[in-house]
Length: 471
Image (cartoon, rainbow, N blue to C red; front, top):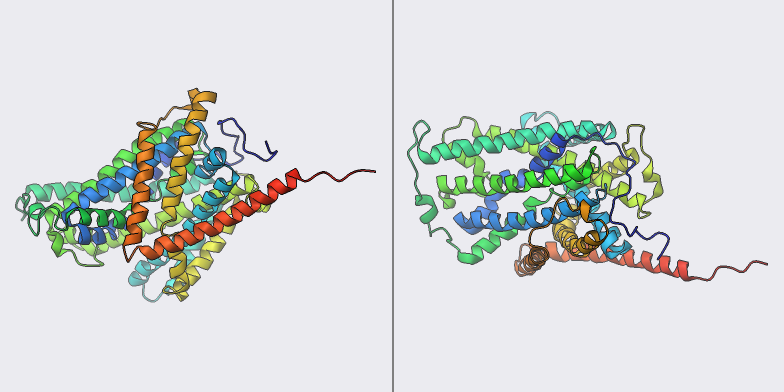
């Protein structure tokens, strides 16, 4: 065994980071981290291709995300670490796997961070046209960099209240929707099932429409992974991550599927306008004043929340890579309060570069970068599943008492999830709009894997080389 090989014990090593996050922060991060603009705005694209069958699309995609989160929760409860699935992949498959998934996920976060900052800036520019969009981006980046450079509890408080607002908006939407469906709101009549069975029926485009809907919505569930990264900075990581995963996955599935069911029950799916939020359409239909502006505020908060979470997640991921010698050692400097400030600054620096590329070349350079990370989430999820298959047996053998959260139906549901991911990739390759994302993401993944294998080869060559003879 190499001197730099990961420890054979599945138990986590002590983290030098702060433990300032509380259980409430982690729980709300799990609930709010995945509820973003992709749901509030992007769900309209899914309805356009699936009709009312979008409910099934969300159910399928949400179930896949829930299975992945359960696997990740099992490993993180047994081995909490700031690098989460990157650490797990290294222990299960070797350094190449930890290096590859860690850097790909970091790249994904800092590129998506640019989309979120630019999207929030566009909304703010609409409210205050005299303040240029680039200046709003600068303000947001500075504010959240400061929040992440301070004590980790500041990040936790930001995310707690942001997530609380998003969750509150979803709950209020569900309550108003159910009342409107039942005809209990002023000037409303019961709608019945006409919108679910009319306009071509529940599956107007058949099973193919449901599958297309899955492709449109599956990536909206990305973001759940940050919960297991954050768990390492709580007082009792093993217990807290198990509780957060248990409470989050079912509620998120309920919010997504429930809100989509309200949308397609209240309104004909053919009435959805491209680029317009289905939530705004429903609120307008039931007579909520200024529905568009209300939803703009919710989307604005969702974007800033995701920006904050992605900056946190990217800094902890690159810090974990540095801990294992897979990133510059200079990123290991930790403040007196236990914050990896250099890792935060490195992540936000690349985030600034991504934002500038997005502002200047949104349809060329940045589009290529965005396509390069478009399907990376599936690669991350696949490595999580493979790692869980390998580590579960090892944990049962070496430290079974740490299995406080277990994957359902192991190993069959893990294999089923892997098969579903492979099916999504194949379907994306057959879809003209999604194909570039798969190809560019495959190229990015291959490039990172090549670097990882070259590093691995050099490490083995160095360790096997004979020591120089001494006189």
